[in-house]
Amino acid sequence: MTLVRIPPTLRAEVGGARELDARGATVGDVIDDLVERHPALRTQLFQNGGLGSFVNVYLGGEDIRTLGGLDTPVDPGETVILLPAMAGGASKGTTGACLGSSRPRSST
Image (cartoon, rainbow, N blue to C red; front, side, top):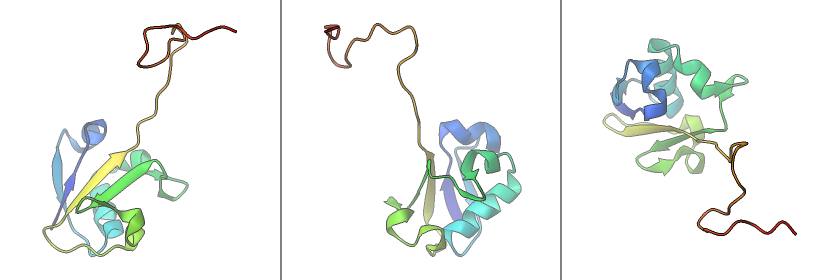
């Protein structure tokens, strides 16, 4: 079994669990097993038939993109971390102040 850590943004899709066990010989197999048991994860992790570019996956603390991607072998007892990227920005009601500065930006 592989331990999969679930970030707070995905816990509602897995019944609130912080960690789950999953089976598979590769990272892709582990994610497929997880999605098969928790179908709500599919829309959160996949885009256009593949893992979304906004989803970061780590095996043993290393980004799988620097390893073998979804084909990266997983040994029993290893930990996979799912970490969807967070996006954000200024809302319409902001004053235009610079982050880390108490002075407003110049309008010139």
